Amino acid sequence: MQVQISQIQPGNNPRKYMDPGELEELTSSVRSLGILQPIVVKKAEGERFSIVAGHRRFAAAQAAGLTEVPVHIVDEDIDGDAAALAENVIRADMSPAEECNAAIHLLKRNHGDIEEVCLLLGWTRDKLTRRVALSSCSVKVREALARREIKLGIAELLASVPEQANQDKALEKIIANDLSVAEVRAFLSKLTQKLEKAIFDKTECQTCRFNTALQATLFSEVVAEDAYCTNGECFARKTEAAVRAKADTIRDDFPMVRMVGISDPETYTKLLADGSHGVGAQQCTACKQCANYGAIVWNTPGHEGEIEADICFDLDCHEKMVAAAHPVASVTTSAAATGIDPEPGDSEPLDDERESGEDPEPDATASEAGSCCGGTTAPHTGMLTNAVREYRRSVWNQAAIMTLVQNPEKGHILLLVLLSKGWNTDRLAIAETLHKYGVTGGSLDTMCATFETAEAKRKIPNLTAAAAASAVVLMSEAQVQETLRYLHPDLSEHWQINADYLKLLTKSQIEAVCEELGLRDTLPAKVFSGKKDQIISGILNAGVDFTGLVPQHMQY
Image 1 (cartoon, rainbow, N blue to C red):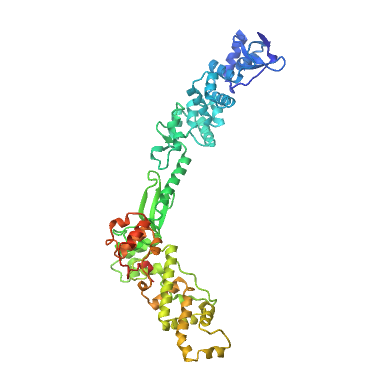
Image 2 (image 1 turned 120 degrees about the vertical axis):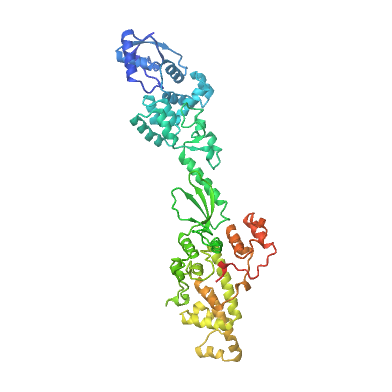
């Protein structure tokens, strides 16, 4: 049946690109021989027909100047999309990208029924799956494939690249440099990560489209034959999360745990007891009680998740400890021998009182740094964690207050010193203390007369000691430390190792304290093999007499 070209309108053509050269050849054939194979159409509105299959022949007929063409009219209920796709695939080299777009369109129309679409197209399930997989390519990549600017193998390789913007960037370079499939594969393979070496849970990876093992079931061209991940960003994110989880498992073991990646600065060093970079055995034990001692969890290529213990994160302090452990024999002074400038000692913190009556800010390192660098023989225990510092301060306060209560004369002297340094009566809580002793106020002569009696005179030392004791809690850490050095109490009479103290320490700190106090070898080895709570329970239930055992970092 012949129909006027003017009565025919284009239908839904899955072929979006017609090669100009091939179309010109077909046009020449039509001029010479006419349309040999009827165009498949179906009824449209009025007297018009809509093309189901034969868009290239119709375009060639128009270009050849024909006024009518032969047609084959099909049932209006026929699936025109399926017929058009099937006819194009059979009759000409339809682009895989165009097949992909059309197949997805049919799947949507058929509510994802793969078997139905395969029957409509006459395709195998494998072919349909492979074509649909090309939907992972960006629009620009599929358009380039449809225009024959790139080969199918390159499109398949680009489908493994995450982020379509990255595919588009790669596409520009591929076309500009006329790269082959092998060259593209070689480049992309450098960006992959072998899943076998991944330290995270790979359950999701088994069905991920960026798994090259899965890609191999979809494409003939893949970046790698084995199971590799082509989504480097996702791989790095999951690896970092796994490393972070690994770090969390040892937070109770070390005072400081740090993740270190390839771009992180090297602000750490290995803590050694012996050798040219060693700090000495005794100092090494003390260093393990420091807040800047700990472990590294590596997040560098080939070492992801590996733990390295015995790390010092204070390079300046470590340098001083190494120098102190290796003095220069020809120089007599300790500062010159170690090459270390002496640390400032406690420069009479009570003299640092300002006229305003405000306490100077507590020096975060004064009590820790002075013991080693000040020239004493005690090892340097380094920086303490805030929790241990607060606990130690409470022990110091208790020791100072109890000593003042037991030695009223020293309290009287301390009170005079505090007054001479500008401490006002409000800070010393003198008024509150007087009230407790029955002195409730009045004129100066009345209050003075109150203390004239023999009974009151006996209370004066206790009153002044109580006033001095009340000042202890208002002192800075350095001031309490200096006060204790004046009072010189035996801390072991006021405190001993207990569960509350040990819970503030990490496993490594507990072991270091036991080492320092000579308990490491007396306790059963199994005590230190469990979790922190088990270690604490084992130590406290081992029948050890802790009397007189005060760790260096608790001393004043």
